[in-house]
Length: 181
Image (cartoon, rainbow, N blue to C red; front, side, top):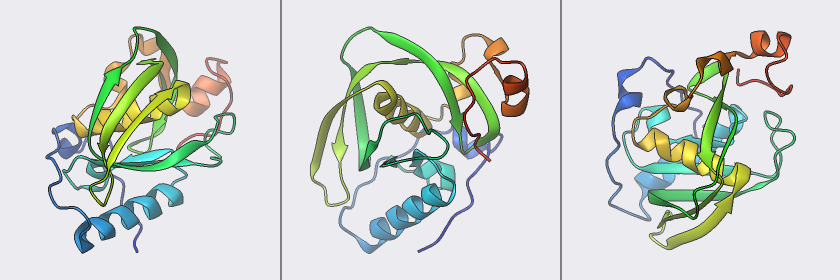
């Protein structure tokens, strides 16, 4: 369909809580989802939330078989998740480096729950109910944050571990991996 412009940090709409999606299996939803998949693929993203392309709705897509931005990460199943809810399965938290299509060229060390359960519906209104761990869980939590107006820099506990990819790489702050732009 179309590759949409990804909004960048500083756009006020990225800080708003999104509204629930109400109609399933519609041309509008199909068009939005195709645009999201196309945009995510064009940007080599691991996931994309509707607010990142200016649509203030609780809709996310995520998943890939391989991703050049995350070459060491395992595959994540391609998923459409609408009106999601996340439950933490335990208290274990792990910090790891994250980037974001809405915060291009930067990375930060972000704490996330390692084991989660996520629920919602797909484009046809069918229930989605899965458990995820590690990178898969990180991707889901990151996209879920977008629906609540939260960008990953807001989760960083120590700003010494936040910066431009090239500066972080030059100072050996994080393992080498392709950046977001």
